[in-house]
Image (cartoon, rainbow over all chains, first blue to last red; front, side, top):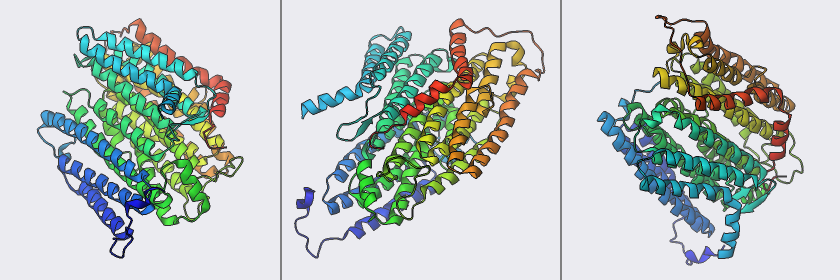
Length: 113
Length: 499
């Protein structure tokens, strides 16, 4: 519990934890909705990144609230993994586009049931 | 500090050997592009050394890297399963026309397979939510690329993208669960979370939500319903060697990580012996009921949809979903009985499932099709392979003289000991349903003739026959002599930090 100094002034103006969590839940829901609704593979991918960033926000809020640096450390790893995922994901989307000339997930229907 | 790290490196010697192998493969691949078989031999040598390094870890029960990894008999058991299946898959790949059709990319292929194995080896030992997430992503990211390995094939790249989208989505959900759990307990170490939960001051609704979200990540990895959608598509589209690898090693790693997480986090750690069904020490969360629903759905859906599959690869995909359902039954018992049953099942599953995929691959090499109708009359053309496939399928059904029977029997036994007879009955009914679609293949091979009769017979090289027989023998052997296997599994259920 050494990170208490991170927010030394516990004044009345500080934004309470709830606000961060609600925003994070809202962003996460937007991401999930986007994944379910959108049809362009790249947009779906962006929505997944939005979900990850919602997680990052809630991790940082908790980390600051608890005065514990572990959460912030996890955020760095999440960012790195998200970057790796984006690299792999875009590469796969390009390879798919070369084969099928589309990135619409509805048209990916060679494989079903 | 450097000394501590150096001391800890000793604990992950097998993983380091495999990492070094991967690096050597990259160098060998880049410097020697003419001879493609060299990467194959290098990866085999590396894997055998890894297996040897693992034997030096017998009996170790400790925690490395400040609680990030547990080096215990439990993780050792699963690491052996993973490395062994990697060896089989690497040899399979050398016999696969599909993999060899990608000229000049053999180095990348073995690099990907071994990287997947490294990720999985870290998964089974992970005892910190951060490590779990990283190991999961490590093995997932490499699997995405590997399942799209045959770049020219449309279905392969489609499978790869579907796998990526489902995988990234479920790991995002899992991560959200992790962040809530972190907020509730203030730590990422699963043993630490258990201690906070033991004090009982945690909001049970938030705990339930976070544990369900984390379960999504596990369920995706083991392809449990309703997070199984990627499985049939990826299994059908990916090169068959990768399919076989995903269905055995990846699933084993997912199960190991899940069992460790549940057993360390959600069980009363003050109990000296785990009573049968020691679930739910926290008020308000009934993960056992959730898991019962999940496993019953998984088995039933897997078996019912498999009934009308005409592509053998896709049928085996649904069959592997159903198998995951049976294994989940062992997980939900949670006591040492159930864990040992799952471990026995995995050893058995390794031989029978890899064997089934291997036969499908050898036939596909010859006839270029995985359709069930093309199997008509194969019993006459190639008796050895047909008999082997018949044995593997009977074993997957779980009928007596084969090893599959022992695996299923141990799981149902642990359920009956836990007084969950109703669930066990559903499992048995499911096995009966599965008999139909497995036997359909056997019937086509032996009892149906092709439209145009031909007298040609398929010849397979000696090396392929040897691998086939060495998968066939354990499938029959463990059906009759399973005492050593059961004892080894019961010895290996020990996890670090669990009494």
